[in-house]
Every structure is written in structure tokens, then in C-alpha cells.
Length: 325
Image (cartoon, rainbow, N blue to C red; front, top):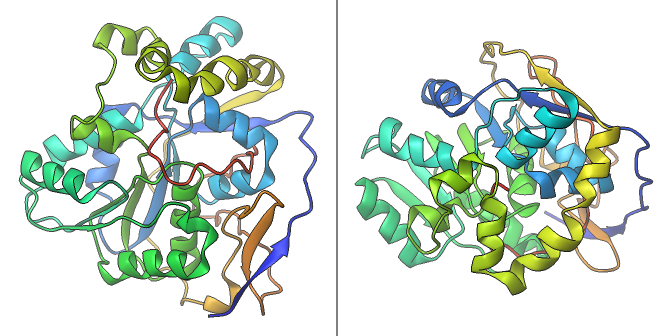
């Protein structure tokens, strides 16, 4: 497969955006995930405040979200802000809570699972803690999303272990969303993919999560800032406040809960592999040299309505830094 870098034309920020969320809390979506099955493919994204800023700033991230099967609000902080400023009452389903719930209440020891990201030690801890006997783990190298061969290796690992009940992508945003969308485009993998960010760190005990009262009050971000001030200061104190102006202009839509109709995925067409992400500071993307198709498809008619939003091209390697704020 021949891949070449193609310059990306910077996109103007949208004057007004519409953000859409699915109407699920943790309990509600746990039931959906439990019954999803292994005969179709779908992926879950969990936007927090940082993601919403990314969605505003970059069309590429918007396309990754538009192709997602489910969009679950990951941030109680955002839920509180939207309740106060817009009178909206949105259900929250954080990726960390959802993953923990699935592991403790839904996943059986012999269920086929795939974990992308996290160390070998973390995979071992996860397997031992939840008694997982069929866990396939692969940790791509730092910055793998810029390397076509590394991306292909990661995709093939997941596809080789398909069908799976769940595939947990713990390589951070926007890498994990790009991998999930590429899997959809290739049409080989079967099962439900969850973009879980830093959840693996909490599940293995490598990072302490905020006390429950801080989580419920929407102050989990402040706990993470105190735990790692150098790493989190820019995100929460410099970049984060932008979300207030963004939400003031944005339209928030709560999508109705519907029962998806299982459909066979299209035959894989590796000649139309879409863009992965901005690859270098010079803002490059990886695309198939022979492809003349749009970089990223929108969701099909059988899937929920796409989100209108955008993201930045900031490269985070794949450190597990995404978590609810």
C-alpha cells in the first residue's frame, strides 16, 4: 500500500457550530454496548471540553467524529456549564466510568477483547484484575500515527483479532479516533470500538482518579491539574477557557435514542484509505496516493446524524491524557 504525504489546506473556523450528543448515561449505554454484538462495526467517541475545542478548530477531527456511531458526553463539567448557561440537562457517560462498568458487569473472562495502547504491564494488570483470558494487546510506538507502516501494523493487528466484543483504543486523541475511523473505512473489523484515552491508567491503578464528590461536582479537572501541574496547566488554564466562548455561540443538540439496524459493512477498498491526521508541524496528512475520493466519509443514513465540529492538529504522540473534565 503506497502512502504519501499531501499538504493540508488550513480550514477556517466555523462561525457557529452544532454539537450533537447521544441521549445515554452510563447505565443506558452499558445496555447498548452489551447487546452490540460481533457481526457489525461501530465506534464510540466521548467528547470532553478539550475535544470540543479541537472540534471547533479543525475540520479533520470533525470528520472523525462525524463517522462515529455513538457520541457520549464525557464531561460533567460541561454538563454543569450547559445546564447553567443554556438550561440543558444532558446525560453524562464518561469513558472511564463506561469502561469500568463494562469490565466489571458485562465482559466475560473468555470474551475476545483488543487493547491498543498502554504498556505490557498495564495489559497484564488489566487481565489479572478482571480475569480476562482472551485479551490481545498491542502498544504502537510513540508518534505512530505519522508513520504509514506503523499505522498499517496497528490496523492489521486489530483486524487479525476480529471479530472482538470490544476493542479499547487507549492512544489518546486524536490518534485513537483516527484509528477507529480507518478501521471503519477498511471494512474488515467487527465489534464495538471504544476510544478510552486515559481510562487504562485509572483501571490499572497507575493514576489516581479524583474523589467521587469532585467527579460529581464537575471538578475532576482541578484534581488532575493538581496531580500533574506541568503536564495539565496549558490544557486547563490556557487552552481550556476557550470552551466558554465556544459554548456561548454553539447549538447543542441531544440526539434521540434509536435502535441501530445491523447492516453488513462494505467490501474493503484499500484504494480509498482516508487521511489519518496532520502528520508534521508543516501540517501534512497521510493518504493513499491513488485515491481521488474525499478524505473522510460522513456517517451513512443508517447511523446517527453527524456532528458539526472541528479540532486542532496538535500532536500528542499517544500518551493517555484524554479524560473527562
